[in-house]
Length: 67
Image (cartoon, rainbow, N blue to C red; front, side, top):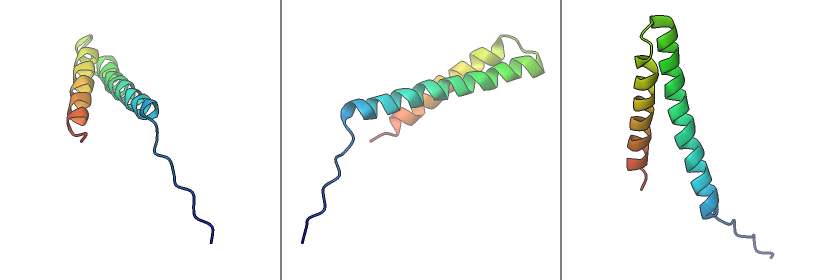
């Protein structure tokens, strides 16, 4: 009976690249929300700055939950 091949775990660089994409996309997403707040609420430049800070805070929170 043939043995099934073992699946290789993702290499370290792939995990790091995935984490990097998640970090950048999270910050950019929150900055986009802040930009929209600037545009529609008229709180220029505080929406973009607040969105950036929320994005960084979200990333720090996500990284603290990784075990």
